[in-house]
Amino acid sequence: MKKTKKSKLLIGVTMGDPCGIGPEIILKAIKSPAIRKIASYVIIGNKGVFDKTARALNIPMEYSTISHISDIGGLKTSVFLLPTGEFKSGLMKLKRATAEGGELSVQCVIRGINLAMSGHIDALVTAPICKEAIHLAGYGYPGHTEMLRIFSGAGRVVMLMVGGKLRVAFVTTHIALKDVPQSITIEDVLETIVITDSGLRQYFGLKKPRFAVCGLNPHAGEEGIFGDEERKVIIPAIEKAREKGIMCDGPHSADTVFYKAFKGTYDVVAAIYHDQGAIPLKLHAFETGVNITLGIPFVRTSPDHGTAYDIAGKGIANPSSMIEAIKTVVRMAKA
Image (cartoon, rainbow, N blue to C red):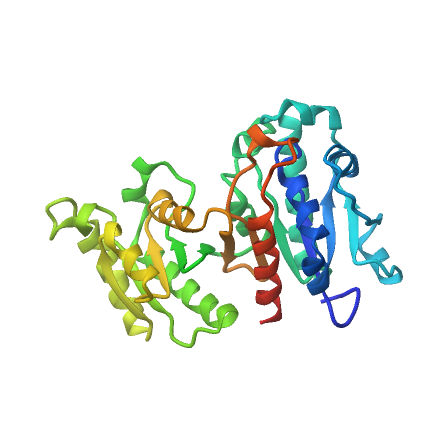
């Protein structure tokens, strides 16, 4: 990896949706002396948007604008801006999903992925994007996780949410609830467990992570009374994971397993669908949760919240989740 200084990592930060709170929380987070101390940063986004945000919200920020990532080598500052994409900053006042914002969001993410894949940055942090805006721009990506998988060339990836005392890995992510039962296979559940096990060992220093796997149905199917996905899909996957030496049990009823994980019985819970795992995680650590992508060939994190159009431009956005995302990505990159 190419760093600005031998002692510091270079972290790429994509701006997210320009009409949301992404630019604000990036400026607030990187302004923190503690964050500036642990790494150098290249912000990937539109200069006009960041300049307007800094002026409007009175967030003084000094950064060097570069035309190419290789320009960093000759500069002494620790924060850089790599201008990416066109955007009329006047659109920011709309505070809603726009095709222009979606287009810029996608361009920034792709550029960040390319920089990580080429080794020009040590890790990537992505600010919140809006799925509606991306679709308005003509793209079909459901979210960051799918874009990261496609543009990194990875096979299967896993979304891991971390916050407070909980870690949650997801078998499925951004799909309709009605599609979940027919979308899960033994291989899907097993690969989620295996990839998460590897990630927790590599990045979090857990020698033998303890897994709890949720059932799909209420009370984990209640011996088939409420559904047979547990018997046909989830239990066989758990058995195969155990054969690989992974400490794994279940399926557990989702209404009790997160309490047990919170109390320390498990290191991670494998959730079958998005809201099954995201609700307890965000209830427990909404302001400090971090979204991590496992299975790609570089480290990526993101704040665990959305674009928050309703408070964009008001100067009240809480940067805590972005700060945690940066701290987490630095720890993981060093590991």
